[in-house]
Image (cartoon, rainbow, N blue to C red):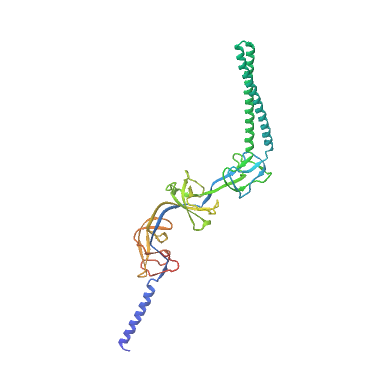
Length: 386
C-alpha cells in the first residue's frame, strides 16, 4: 500500500471522527413556542385575593314586627313582587274587631260633636237676638245673662265633643298601626328568594342577640354589584371611580365593564388569612338578558393605569432581570436580550426599549437547554400568530 493511500485513509478517518465528535458536542435544535411583539393596550391592575361574590343591589331579610300565627302566606319562592305588596299576614281577628269597634265609636263621637256644634250655634244666635231686644227694653238683663251663660256652656260642650271625637280617631289610628305590625309588605320591588315558615306556624322576630331565620328573603335583581377582598397593600392604590373588569366562572372568558363604587373604610383581619379591604364594583355596561344570579363567584381587576398603542409582549416571556429570548428566523437560532419594560400585568408587559414590532419572543422559557445562540424551530401549533 502506498504512502498516499495510507495518508488518505487516515485523513478520512480523522474527518469522520471529527464529524461524530462535532455532532455529539454541538447543541441540539429545540422546539419553542413564540409570540409576536405587537402594539396594543397595557394596563396596570390589581385583583382580588379571594373569590368575590355577585350581589343583588338590594337584599332584605324580612320578618313581622311582632310574633304570631301565620294566617296568610301570599307569595311563594321565585315570585316577583311590587313595592307595598302583601307578603304575609299573622292572625289578627282580635285587632280587626277592635278596629271596627273603634270606627263605630269614632262615628258616634263625631255625631255627638256635630249635635253639640248645632246647639252651640243656636245658643249664640239666640244671645244675639236678646242683645237687640234689651236695647228697646223688651227683656230684662237677667234673661240676657242666662242666654249668654247657656251659649258659653254649649260652646264648651261642643269643644269637649270635638276632643272626644279626636280621641276616638286617635285610638282608631293606634289599632290600625297595630294591625300593620301583623302584616309584612315588600319594601321594594324584587323576587322572593326564600320563605321560612308555613301556614299556621308561629312566626317571631329575632330577640336581641339571638339570630333567627327571617320569614322572607327578598332580592332586588334590577341591578347587581360585586364585592371582593383586595390585599391591604393594593387597596391604598385604588380610588372610587376607577375602571374595572368583572369575570365570573358562570360566563367563562366573558368580561364585564365596571367601576369601583365603594372602598371599605377599614381592614378585615381574619384569622389565618391575609388582611384585606372589601371593595364594591358595579357594572357600567350590563346588557339586558344577562342571566345573573346573586351568589355567583366573581373576580375583579381594577385598572390603576392604562396605555394604548404601546409595544407589548406576553408577560410569560420575561425571565428574571428583564431577559427574553428572541427567535431569529434567518439563522434559525435564539438570541438572548435584556429589555426595558414599563407597565405590566399578569398577561401583557409594555416594552420601552430592546425590541421591534414583528419580532418573535419565546414563551416556552422553561424549555430544557434554552440558551443564547442555540438552534431552534418554531412549534407550528402552539405559537401565537400576529
